[in-house]
Amino acid sequence: MTKRVLPVLMALGCLLSPAVQAQGDYLYGEEVEGKPPSGAVVVLRGVDKITARITDIEAPLDEVAQFGSLQITMRYCHKNPPEETPEVSAFLEIEDHLPDQAPEKAFSGWMFASSPALSAMEHPVYDVWVMDCKASTPLIEAGKAPNRP
Image (cartoon, rainbow, N blue to C red; front, top):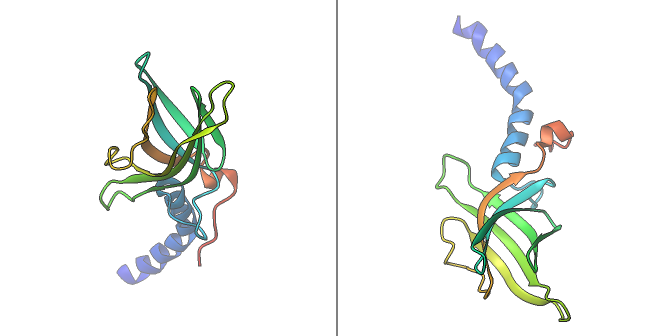
C-alpha cells in the first residue's frame, strides 16, 4: 500500500509546495531575492508620553507612516519561523517633523521585539517599538507568489 500512496503524496507535495512556500514568505519574512515580500508591513506600538495614549501603527515597506509628529519608514522586517526562537526585527527610519522646523532624524537602525531596550528610540514625547512583521495581503491571493527553484 505504501508503494502506491507515496507517489501520490509526493505529487500532492509538489502541487502544494509553491503555495506553502509563498505563505512562508508572507508569514515569516523570509527573503525573496534579498528583499522582504513586497506587501511586507511592520506592526509597531507607539506611546504618546504626554497623553499616555497607546497606538498600533502599521508601516508598509518603503512607505511613510505617521504617528504624531513622527514619520516612520520601514526598510526591512523579518520574523523567525515558529520552529526557531521567536524574534521580530525591523530596520526603521524615523524623522520628527515639527511645525516651522526642519525635519530631524529621531532614529535610524534595527529594532528588536524581544529586546526593545537594546536599540530604542530616544524622544521626549514618543516611544515606538516593534511588535510584528506581516504582509498587508497574502501573496497567493495577490497573485505575487514568488517562484522558488
